[in-house]
Image (cartoon, rainbow, N blue to C red):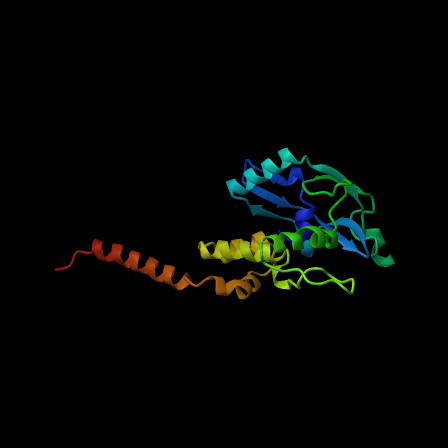
Length: 211
């Protein structure tokens, strides 16, 4: 899931019985104002969830109860011509992640106060002198929150998962884009294909009666 989709994840989106997570909304921010919106591309989706992932989410919700957060739906900065198509009534959802003030997470605050310190604790980035009032952490664009999606994709592909299924779970409209982005994570694809054909031909050959 994208960062905004994680911030917008609600307890009602978890379907443990069927092993899926419904991605129905994201938390967006413009000029410091937070609001709910549909996921990127304006489409909801379902993502298969492993039992271990669902168990971890369940444990998280037991330790930190979901917090009901109310925000406007869609952007408060849409052009006037778009206003009639926007539902301005605030919507409330029990979010799995919220601040101490019981508000939705702000990506800038999250990245600065939680994500970067976590990377530093793991030894992935270092701190730097902050004489000019800038960031106290080393630049880490390649280690941003989005890296979690890349990790998920690489694990799925290396396990032999279908590129079409992966594209659907990631929310990519074009499976070709997913293939072009992650093709380097498929080093054993040809090996599996050759093994499959060898196995098939072996079964066929053994079934023939030869003189």
